[in-house]
Amino acid sequence: MMRAGLIFLSLSLLATAQAGKFNPVGAGALMRLPHTEGDAYLWVPHSCKHKACSLMVVSHSRGNTSEATLQKPHLMQFFKTFVDDGIAVLISNDAGPNTWGNEKALLYLKSIWEEARSSFHFNGKTFALGYSMGGLPASLSVQKTLYPVSALVLIDARVDMLAAYQGSDASRVQEIQVAYQHDPAATENPLLHDPMTEAFAGSVPLMVIGSKDDRTVPFADNGEKFFLLHGKNPNSVMLQLPGGHLHMNRWDPDTARDILGFLKHLKPGVEKPMEANKQ
Image (cartoon, rainbow, N blue to C red; front, top):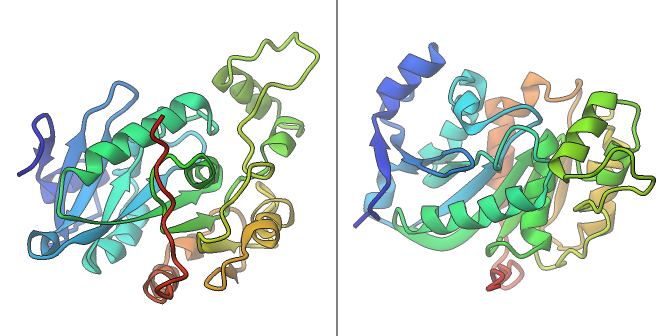
């Protein structure tokens, strides 16, 4: 039985109204999970009625939201590949469009994961996926043990927070100051949640996808560096693709199948989900 308070939506009608070209007929059922920091959306495969399914938690790019994600056909078609394969997809709002992995975003993820796992036939296995700025909350979900994570997938991910804050993009610096409630007149840097300096459990498999052509989030200083530091699990893989930041090839069916292949071939006995933080 589903928990009270969840709002069930017709995915076909919702997508037709909000995303125009996207038509996910037969893919699964979409539930809106209400939250004061922005609703999340849980896309549950029809097959989960008959067998337990795993869960993929998706953290979004800078300026995006869960609502806006529903209006992006290329993203929804990408997620549909996982739903068709029997993985429930949780489209997170990350507590807002520009939260940069702050405390509010992390509390949101912990809360919305708890809600999602109780809302369908869950097998206990969760994958965290973050793209662009979403790499911060996705990585921190592992590092802060917000919920048990079986594997982490990063796409063109921002994971070096200090470099982001000290960069030349003034609007980005201001966003981070707002996200971390930092006084811009202060001389010291804000206390940032920085995946590059946080401990990472080597038992969690890592898949990093990125490009040397990315000028927005330099791959060498983010995804590649993070992989070299933390990709110790023998299942961990790095996939380099051509094209600039969030190029459309990141969302094509081949990339989705590469991710599915990574998730399906995690070796038993090596993949050890972390325990959720009980505090």
